[in-house]
Length: 176
Image (cartoon, rainbow, N blue to C red; front, top):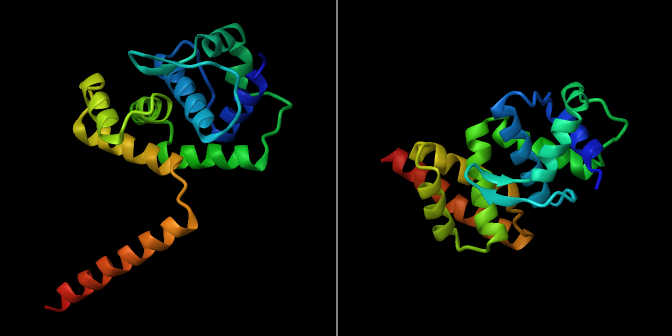
């Protein structure tokens, strides 16, 4: 397994220079790679659920053994357009917020890996992440859903018609 160069390329694309000595950087690294993997970017790192969310000891070993490569973000590896779009979508929604990434990745693990129904996964995240505010939890879960959910054309049409009804109702209420 040597996905190190792809991970470094993803971090470079995200504008993330990792310092293995900082806990938040290690958390960000783990959650970025996990969420990219859920989105379909291929990585061989296995992830399991730990206290702070999905975690891969193999990925940790890589960034500890090759800390200089990770901090410099130097690699010859280029991302495919799809991979670069996945990184851009992820950083556009989450930035490099450790809390939102942790919450989103944990929900993603429960809902997409463990196949828990959305409400059950939400309740589990609230229990597991009780040290975060309800607002942060809702924000992290909404962002991961937005990142991972790709509606079909049919679903988009239904959503658009529903939104149009809401917009019309809002305009009418403003007139009265």
